[in-house]
Structures are given as C-alpha cells and as structure tokens.
Length: 368
Ligand code: ATP
Ligand code: MG
Image (tube, protein in one colour):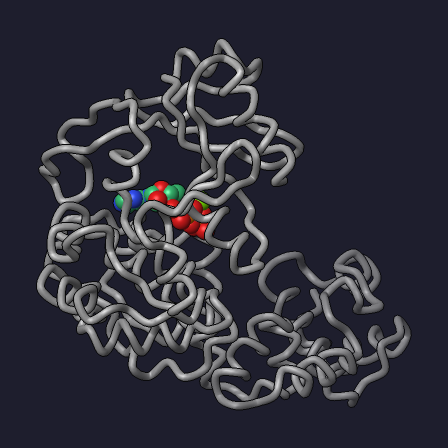
C-alpha cells in the first residue's frame, strides 16, 4: 500500500505539483498499525488530478477530495486548503485552495494527524506530531477551544483516536471538549453514529465509554444507560444496553431487528434448546455474553440442537396437509411449533414416521 501511495505522489510531483501522504496512514505507519485507506494532500487541484490519473473520480461537491482506487485501496487526494468561517459547527463556510503545505496542516484536527511522508518516504513533521505520538497524547493543532468550536465532530474524533490508540487527551483538549460539547447538537445523528460505532468496535471500547461518561458526552449525545455497558465485545450488544430516543440515531433495519431480539433474549434462558433454536446462535450468544454467560457455552449448546431450522425437521408441510389431511393455515404453524419443541427437548425422534404418528395421535381433532 505504501509503495502504491509513493507511486501516486511521485506521479503528481512529476507533473509539477507537491504531494504528500498525510493523516491516518502516516500516523499508523509510525505506530506499526495497518491502515485501510491513504490520505494524500497536494497542491494539484481536482481537475488537474483527473488529468494525471485515469480513473480518478472527481468529488461530488466543490472542494471535496478526488478518490482513486488502486488494488482495493482507496486513495483520497485532497488539495491543500484553508477553511474559513465555520457556520454550522461542521462545514466551513468557505474553503480556499492554497499552495503551501503548512497552511493545509494548520487546518487539521490533531497534531498526530499532521505528520506527512514525502515522495522519498521521508517523514515531515512540522507541528510536533511525532513527539505527541511518542508521548501518547492527543493535542489539537492550535487552540482546542477553537478547534472544537469550529467543528464539534472533532470531539468524537478525539475520543475515537484516544480509544483506538490508547492515548490520553491533553488537559486543554478535555477542557475544550467540555466547553463545546453542547455543539454536538448541531452534528447529524448519522455522523455521530459513525463515530460512536467506531469507538464501540475498538478492542479498547471501555476506555472510550469511560471518556464519554467522564466528559459528560453521554448526556449531550442522548445515550442513556451508557454507564451500564460493561461488556463491550459486540457492537449490537452495546447498542442493546444503551437507550436512545426514537428518530435520532439511524439504525439499519437489520440493526433494529437484532437490537430488539437481543433485548428480548436478555430475559430468557440462553442455553435452553427451544430458545436457542428460536432466537439463533448470534442473538443468544450476544445476549448471553451481556449477562456473563461464556460465548462458548452458548455455542456448545447450539451445536447440540437436534434441529437448527424448520427445514431440519423430517416432515414437510405437504406431509402434514396431504398425508394427514390438515387444512393449510395457522393450525399448520401451531403443529410445527409443537413438533419443534418435542424434537428439541428430545421427547420425540426426528424421523418422518415418528413425527406423523405423533401428529395423528395429538392433533386428530383438527382433522377435517
Ligand atoms: P482513519 O482514516 O484511521 O479513521 P484519519 O486520521 O486518516 O483516521 P480521516 O477521516 O481519514 O482520518 O481524515 C484524514 C485526515 O484529514 C486526518 O488525519 C486529519 O488530518 C484531517 N481531518 C479529517 N477530519 C477532520 C476534521 N473534522 N477536522 C480537521 N481535520 C480533519
Ligand atoms: Mg484516513
């Protein structure tokens, strides 16, 4: 990935512009962490970049980044800029392209995100980012109050980097967060959820949650019960404990369904065969882990189930309708549920004859 990135910046430089790798990639590279994307900053303007690179995609909005896909890696190429007058605490009112790397670095959020690498792989550190990296501390570029006041999303980015890298927030950063936390109201719930999801999926998520609580962010973010989250193994598990108002955070339908099932499954025995069958392995193990039941215990019991889906039952609805003369409709579903339970609790063998005989004996009154 580094090789491909260096190739890209060399190509930009060959065309007479300046270009550097910047941001997360360089930060993670120095820390020995793998990155999934690469940010490049350059003096070349988007139109000039699409002339240099075939397949480069122009940004949808003015002043966005050009993106370039090379072998499954996205390279975000952003023209040097300064950002002026933040109006809505998120989007700068005006952006100006500039020619100088320093000016571009000054508008960035944290010092550890301003370290660059040039076309020869040399590290360029104009704002003391390396020192902060080795001291494991998150500091803003310039005054913390101003940085968070301009763009409140940076509050959550600070928590995310502190969590992911296990770094401390400088005192000034903490103070800047506390003074500006109300401005998070101006940030869309979808951007807030993206950041929260990233914090919650860190292996160190507990640190992030503690920070959110200590800085009083749970309240401004509308995250009730955050202090009750003590198992952080699964994102859905965390969101199942947290309570948020409807129509705030945009959960996908799949997330909504899983969260509501996990909440239900918290109130049942997650090792019971029928519950395991009904709610499935994922929901039971997620709920189980939240209650302190080891994931392996749930998995072991799940593997032992006689049937895991209705298809595993050695009888079809056609058998029930045609061979036994039952009427299609809701009674079929009742019969199925009874058969499933009998088989799961091992009171009835899962073979066609046994199942048909059981039906004949027990459901005869339903026969037309
Ligand atoms: P990662 O990609 O690992 O999430 P990153 O630091 O690369 O972390 P990106 O969102 O990819 O973060 O942004 C790339 C760079 O752009 C950052 O390193 C930072 O220099 C700058 N940046 C991103 N978002 C902001 C912001 N809200 N305010 C100021 N600078 C920002
Ligand atoms: Mg990045």
